[in-house]
Amino acid sequence: MPMRSLDDFAYSKLAELERATLRRTLAETLREDGLWVKRDGRRLLSFSCNDYLNLSHHPALKAAATAAIAHYGVGAGASRLVTGNNPLFRELEERLARLKGTEAACVFGSGYLANAGIIPALAGASDLILIDELAHACLWAGTNLSRARTLVLRHNDVAHAKALLSENRARARNTLLVTDGVFSMDGDLAPLQELAALCAAFDTWLMTDDAHGLGVIGGGRGSAFAAGGARVPLQMGTLSKAIGGYGGYLCASRAVIDLMKTRARTLIYSTALPPAMVAAAIAALTIIESEPELTAKPLAKARAFTSHLGLAQAQSPIVPLIIGEPEAALQLSNKLADEGFLVTPIRPPTVPVGTARLRFAFTALHPDEEIARLAEAVRPLVALAPARREIPKEMAKCPPSS
Ligand SMILES: *Cc1c(COP(=O)(O)O)cnc(C)c1O
Image (cartoon, rainbow, N blue to C red; front, side):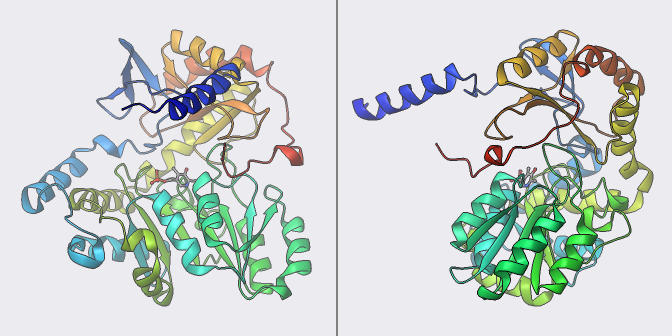
């Protein structure tokens, strides 16, 4: 039975979003080869998938997942702490830890669940969390769930981090600094060497979200290994981007991982990943470890695009083109679709107000001639985009709420 006040609430929220061109809807999309998509009867080359190595359709991953289904069925049956801890988890965690150079790893149901579980297991009301203003929504979710005192860092501003730590570190029991390693909507890298040195000096635990680093940066090992390497004691990430499947993980010391397995609520109270996803991730890591030339490709493709257009050289496979207003970003995205390219517009609250954008994600299999054709289609837009983005303080991305 519909409830009047409830539906009135929903309709008025939707109307408000509609007026601001911020209403989102789902478009049915077929991904049949990890590169091209079918949507609204059109075949489009996707620059909006995070499947950087196109592994979601790789025969080795399909075979591993299919074999796991044949052996173990479709669902995990329960949480990992009950009966869901298939032996494949041990192998995957050993492989992740080896790749990241940590003692141990813990696999979660998704990247979002990982952050929502890890941060509250490490920090509480007497603690302090410093978080980059452009950190991913699920780092904010974990931070808010922790109830720690929270200070917002100006984006990638090490001097600001130092000032905040100098002033506030002594009053907190423990302090955690959380940041994306590769920023998901900007494609830039966190200055991890500098942040690691700062955190060491202030007895602060550095945690990176490497969702967009694993498999594509630092020889495939992620953002902590780019630019000479940085000591990052908490390296979190996802199995749903370059790894091509689904799931999340934390790589850390044995003690931290043991703590997660007994305290992280999103591990304890959520059903384990299906065994097929674990098997697929193991197959993906084998490819990443044995094909360094493959892991180098997405960044090389992104750089081909930025050099075609004379933009600042890409630091990751993600290249943003800031447009400004959501309406304009939507129109440009529609124009590119007419040229055969899928480039989804990114709007607030995913990005700060006033910085709606096109976000291009490059993958290993994007044909060079299509990248050149895309660059030509985008060229007239570059002139329109603001040359440099400054994020006024009040525009900082806040935990998405109303
Ligand atoms: C996609 C993403 C996540 C969430 O990972 P899922 O496995 O998709 O839940 C977390 N952090 C960042 C930076 C991401 O881009």
